[in-house]
Length: 264
Figure 1: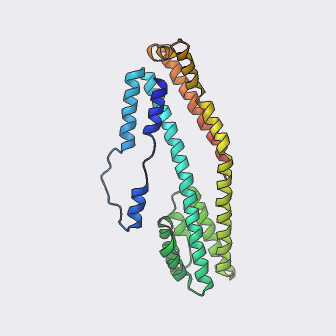
Figure 2: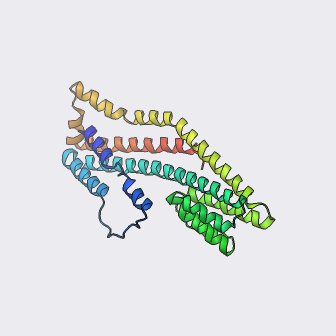
Figure 3: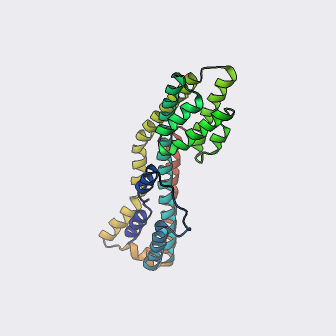
């Protein structure tokens, strides 16, 4: 029963496909403003918590809530990492186009507009802001402030610093921005390499976190019926909450250890 609840909670927290949103952006349709209503994830998570409370009592509901929050946090962190890498890749390609235009003799604003026309939708707005700043005074501070993610903000900060350095000392802007592009490309390649190397430790940590569920399954197979003890007695409810809390803490701690190895 507990294993079924945990599996259902994991499935209910699985994120939806972002493909429709990307297609709307590529087609040029602006997203409409909608009234804030409970999304599908929130509604299904609430239904899962109610089901856990009915099947396993208050302790089961608390355990399901902790596990649901942990899974959602893990998925959000993974999506944020992938989004940051995609933003870095898009900015790298845009900088390559920008540098090509500068070496062809184009004005920085014109080269940035040309790069924005061919850039990824998530990077086009940034390149438009770069073009606007190049037309005014060349200060890219406002471009850095538009970034939401700390990793993207740090990337744009390096770009702004390089741009100001070229203007202050009279350096060739194309060469300076090309150096920034090579640095971003190498950072993204190294980050993907580290993430691939961390797949093994993450799998081991996940396997260790699932050992309690395996122990429950073995106890049930031997006829000990541990699920009845966990769901029908007060000490069992307390042990269920404590066990799931320790499991969630172990997942969070292992994620923190493996995340420290990823460069920012």
